[in-house]
Each structure stands twice: as structure tokens, then as C-alpha cells.
Image 1 (cartoon, one colour):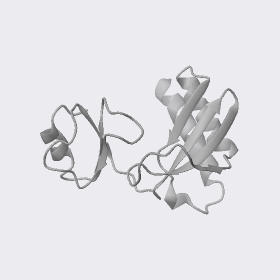
Image 2 (tube, rainbow, N blue to C red):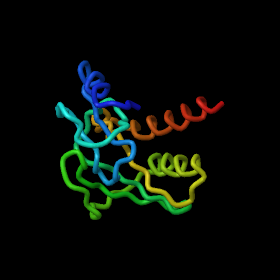
Image 3 (cartoon, rainbow, N blue to C red):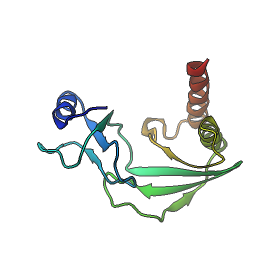
Length: 144
């Protein structure tokens, strides 16, 4: 977290970043990517994250108990927020990851944003399951 816009600009000098207002409005409001303006476009404090290359499609998972469904939506880095989306089949590994994320926060109803579309893994048999399993195991190791 950065308190000043000067700190944000310093963070963005050597790497590509995404900046979010800590107290932003959600739904893509208050989220910026490079190039950043010289003057702060929103009030701080700011969350600065590394830019992750992706296919510009957000994968939104919705959890209700054991049920998980998914929607594909245009990234709010490129488009205005939309309540619509295109349904997609959520595989078992991604569904397990969404349930695990919700359960880890003690939630039974949740929306889970899949941040990285892992474009480098496209077409690799078993990659989605392997990555999801690794993330679940890694999370357990961090808590252990």
C-alpha cells in the first residue's frame, strides 16, 4: 500500500503496474494501468500490484454452497463494468479452487475473481488441474 501518488509513480518506474484506490468504488472504478497520469486521479491510499499479462477477459466465479457457476466478462481495465456476461463451463479444479477460497473466508455465498487467465498454459493437457492443485497446496503450506 502506498500513501502518496509520488510513491505510486516511483513503483511504476521499473515495472508495469495496476493501481487501485484502497477505498475505491469497486466494479472497476478506481483501477488504472500504465501509463499512469502525473497527477493523482483519485484519493489515496493506493494498492500497487504487478501487471499480469492476460487475454482481457475476466473470469468471474459464483459460489453458493457447493454450487459454482462462471461468467466471462470484458476486463474493466478496457471496458466499463457490465452486469452481463457469457456463461462458461467451470471445470472441477477451478470449482474446487472457488469453494476453497470461499471456505477460507468462512463464506457460503461468494464471488471469486480469477485474476490470471494463465494464457501460457492454453492447450496444455492437465495444466488447469495442476495449477489449481498447486495453489490449494501452497495456501495450506502458508497457513501451516
